[in-house]
Length: 360
Ligand SMILES: Nc1ncnc2c1ncn2[C@@H]1O[C@H](COP(=O)(O)OP(=O)(O)O)[C@@H](O)[C@H]1O
Ligand SMILES: [Mg+2]
Image (cartoon, rainbow, N blue to C red; front, side, top):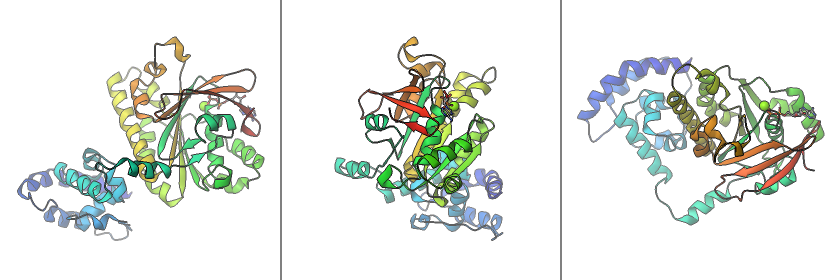
């Protein structure tokens, strides 16, 4: 409901602001706009937590409100975004948005930096166990925070089971391969099963009631809904100490909806922007993002990247780590790392059991 308020504001003020902004080269925030927005927000029942936004130079309270209501409640959320996103989500002018992003980036030191700083940042990255020692080993300890990991493969290769297992494992203490954190699950296929969570939690001697409580679940009914859920995820992530976000599956809705409606280019563009939103969540909140992707055929049937046939190139470029799953014998599954920037292309075997994902 807070959202609809901004939308209204944005439509009303967009053009006015762009005209006026030209006259005020120096102080980029438009005072008139601030006043106008202030009236719209007279209803003080909406609590706004401005976080560290107050440290943004030249940004008035009304603009800060627009930012917060638009989903940008911290410097990090702004600094990792493009001006275009801010412009669209908050109803701010092009120039204002550009200046706000630039100011946030400066505050956060997001320009060039020495490689030892990059190393400092990478050292903060944590790994979450998959349940299979062999799979963890080829992943350098497990799936990583601050990055996006894509599991792709045919039907019944264990993608959904792995997603369930990681929602449980993230809740383990650090000493056992977790992060004492919560999980968020966006289910596009209706295949989430709490009873599987209960079995997996029990097998790890965890209180399954608590484990279920720590998984924030949403069923996404179509691609627009899925996009919206991800756009709104930031606040829930912060409030619930969420360290892992699952989207199972990432492109199912896009694939089915865009058949016969719109062009492939439209679909790619929507997917690209959705993927960008996810990568931004990974960066801003330093969480692990896991997505699944069902492919119809073995990758070697195609030349090169199997995702050409489904999600196109987009997914491959946006993801940070991709893992191809295939069936082995019986309950065995084979995971192969492909295209990871810092890991060799290696394979691991894991099992799907009643107790969850296990090593052999
Ligand atoms: N309770 C269970 N015990 C053992 N294996 C299970 C259990 N539930 C599901 N599985 C196995 O998991 C596989 C399905 O994996 P799933 O993750 O749903 O595949 P995908 O999401 O890749 O289509 C099936 O082969 C099934 O045998
Ligand atoms: Mg599945």
